[in-house]
Amino acid sequence: MKNIIVTGCAGFIGYHLSLKLINQNFNVIGIDMINDYYDIKLKNDRLKNLKNQSKKNKNFKFYKINISNKLKL
Image (cartoon, rainbow, N blue to C red):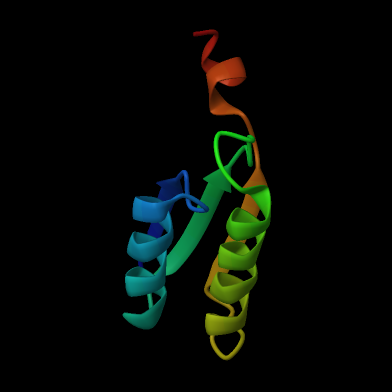
């Protein structure tokens, strides 16, 4: 099984990509900084759904990280 990192996994595109990959049994490592660009509750609900979708296979892990700090952008 392949590991895939999805940045912005709580955003619109990242969420849907993560969901598709989870359902195809990939191991998904989701990264997001959960900023307030738009509704944080919506982002947290998406993360909760990703975790629920992967309960059976445990193929989703989430890390709250601001990668721009790590890359010194």
